[in-house]
Length: 302
Image 1 (tube, rainbow, N blue to C red):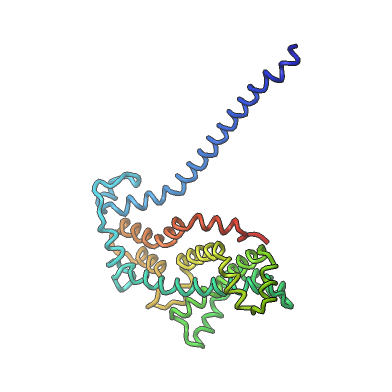
Image 2: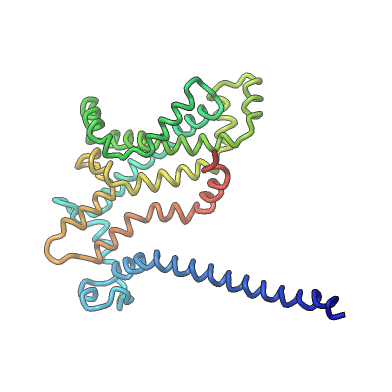
């Protein structure tokens, strides 16, 4: 009799032990995520509280202490009157230069990457695999290898030191990754759609703009987020190719931090850093779920 009832009696105990293990497992995962979030958010917290303090309070208080009286003076100085060398116009000039660089660079690189990915996925031309391998190789070559040849070429054609030169550079350097993303995404789409459109008489660009591109919203969002982040946070290309009149916001931030004379204005530096990082931060917060959806839809497949 006891042998017959033992499985029945042990089932609730086994279930209880499994439930306890699951609860501890969830608690461990949540604890790890909380510690990780605190680790990455701590510098942002220090930057924020420091940007709202006066210099006199920064000298005597802890870096983790909240400001006794919140002040926006450092933010105003960082935006409109901080010195970025010989000129003291703040980050506003660099912000608009970055916008002028960002919009055409993102639009052109994403469009060209989509066309390349579409061609390499559905139009099996001779040597397509070799071309794709060369593009992938280009994604891993450091920028520094291309800088001097590009300077010589841009100087000869008259676009060195202009916004055009910076935009062209971002398009060139973004092409391998954009092609990889779109090629892998399009390779997951049904080939029958492409074949049906070809039978109906649609050409290369008609198939792309009427069928493929409307189906590419998830991966386009992924590509835009990646390009916005890379281009906005770029320092090297803007420093080398933009010229003195077209320096982006990141270069202006470096100039603000490194051209300070006398007492170092830590509150202004922190405010300027946060202002420079606002655009990619807003992009991530506003479209984070679309980014995850695009990745899950085939952005890293193939």
